[in-house]
Length: 177
Image (tube, rainbow, N blue to C red; front, side, top):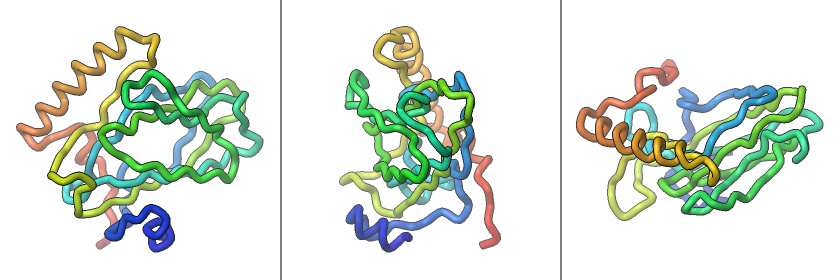
């Protein structure tokens, strides 16, 4: 799988993550949603860059009308591309400081289930080293959430850069390596 994903994406030094840091199974139920955000840039130890997120949907009979859709936003988070969370659909998403994505509100009585897995690399996808925390913003009509998200993201990024401590860093699952 790693070789195939590496060939498809052209990222030569991809590494899998046996600890499933921030990955695994997710279940969302009616009324749940996830606002636009970018994922944090590294693994739990900050030794590798988070490069890809693979999302595999496993909810039977899910369609656009059920909600729970994957939304990939443009840079200024004003227009999404929407993909239904159809069963057996695999989305391979590059993660970065401009890949805002979200989940639309679940409208179905049935849960939306997804298996997610991240792939990492030791090399930076940019020409320089960088770090950022998971950063949320609001949808275009959510002006307060957009303002609050900017402030919250700035403060959490600043604290993480100065102290080396960020939310969730100690919550990584550990394998027996």
